[in-house]
Amino acid sequence: MSYFRPKPRRRKKDNRSTKILLTVVTAFLMITSIIGFLGNSQNTEGIDYKGYTFTQTPQGWNVKVGEEKYTFYTNPYEAEKYNLSSDAVEMLKASKYIVATFDTSFDDLQALDIARFDLANELDSGLGITVFSGVAEENSTYPLPVITCDNATSMIPVVYFKSSDRAMIKRDGFCVVLEAPTGVTALKLKDRLVYGMLGIME
Image 1 (cartoon, rainbow, N blue to C red):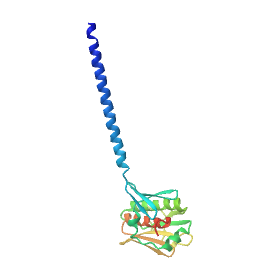
Image 2 (image 1 turned 45 degrees about the horizontal axis):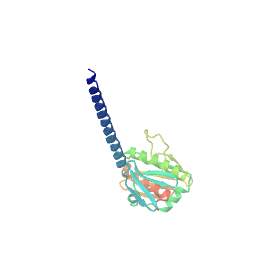
Image 3 (image 1 turned 90 degrees about the vertical axis):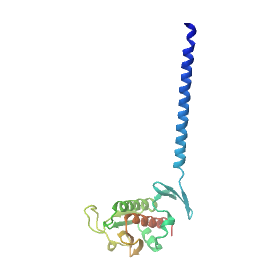
């Protein structure tokens, strides 16, 4: 009986070696898959614009200005098609406070909400400008003060997101009007405005 004891031990060792080999192979495949995934996820596109490097991510176009990082939905080359006067930019930059108001008649108000929210964050972090919110007409969904270009002053200018059948930016006294047919277009105009205020675009 003693002659037969070593054989089972060899089988156990063989089985153990096979399990170890399978474990190593499985781990190797998993690691290479993870590395491949990370490699693909980091294959982002980038563009250079007047000394600024923009990197495209699922969230948008990332760029660093000074010590601050920003994410825009429109790259600067696309935003160039929207004209923005330098006097409008300087007028807004000269103030510590701005009111952003909007028409509630936009079909996609969620995109417009993002535009207003981002405008406030970007001007605060980049230029130290506080942005308050208003609406162009009374609305039960947005219980905000009614603000139009008529309320704009040199101390507190107004940025007005206006529902329109065209896309453009114009200055009206101490008010900068962003005319857009949709909330998404308004978001692009917001990017153009902030590009100008941060000095990325003229």
